[in-house]
Image (cartoon, rainbow over all chains, first blue to last red; front, side):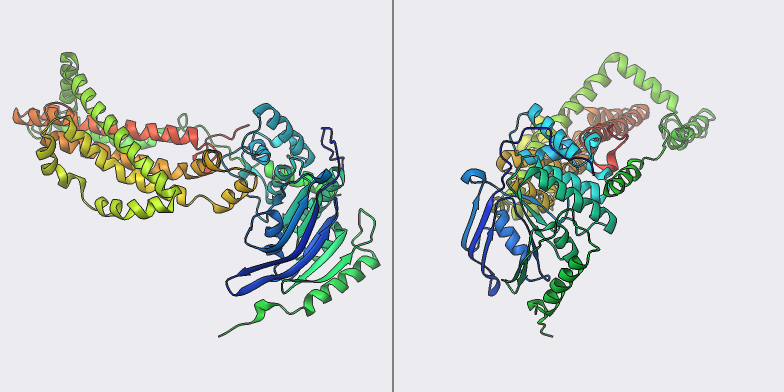
Length: 262
Length: 280
């Protein structure tokens, strides 16, 4: 993999710290999160895994600031104690089709950047995801994986301290997915932001994360450090053993979604 | 290895474009004009051979001669100009009001609750049914035509603006909000471009209704304009002028439709359905 460093000076390479204390979230009578406590260190890559309906995406939306109706305390400390906003990468690319690829990336800088500055930053971010020459085209000519790379560039262009990823690789084919994982890992290592990735893919979590948090029925059921050196080899024995442990933990957990009334 | 995978996928996607010839230069470009041309030839031939009395339908050459006559006297230009300015002012007045209502009802639930039901009720009145009332209110002055055309173009523009704004992808709106877009910036960068295809469809419908309404209004109650020209020609049995007026309507309708197509192609160049060539 070639170097993916941005061509700009980065002053500090530290990410944001994230602290959750007793986070609860209800939808009507249905309690989705029941007191989640979690500490994420600056620059850490944390994967949140869990069955569908376990509350992992709800937790992510709370952290990302998309959901404000939660109980408990959420603190996001930017580098040097500065308050920061999370950048989000969704499962879908969410690229407005009426903006060219480079303008889509510039979206990440918010509503009022200076045009010249925005374009040069967007170009650098596109270069980091290996799409430097596609800037003037419309997004719909891109493949699914390329669209997600544009979405990644858009999330990174403002050089966030915290990047929140909501199963961004879930819809990609296996090969593209592996490519994206290593791109994500490289960019994360270059940029030093804190990354929180929601995924249902145990292998993906093990490949990317420093730490894996298993959510079950709205609570943290397992908090596991992943000690392997990077870049990780999926074939190793330890890797497979840990994957097995995680999978069995996932499978034996009872999900609320299995309760039916006919 | 991963780099290779990325690069290969990049190349594969790069070549989607079909090798289409510019349609105007290809022989296919003539096809749409073959039928009208044949009709014209048969029409001219049967009129010249005396099969078609001029009192029923004058020959195309006579219509052309009438056009030339009226053009030289300035009558045609005056009447066409009057009709055009009536159509344009009606479209601007009705379109602006409709667009404002569509925007505010699309963006605000409160505004929708307050006005949408009323608009939907009024929409079901055929606008030409108002002609007797409008004549009583405005006489046969300009106000009558302005009112009828504005009324007619209001509904297609209102409904399509409203619908366009309501159907903007909520995922894109959420994405833009998460990047700090709100208020006018959100409207300009996400909501308006997302609603534009629908708004332009509304505009095209409105143009059709605009001509229909105007012509009926001018035929019934007017002292100038193309509709008036046709009606006064009928009184003197000038079938050539009547046919000329009808042909001009067809032409103006086509011009208006083409104008919207050009607007669509310019403003919706991102849309796969309107794209002519890929932006390089």
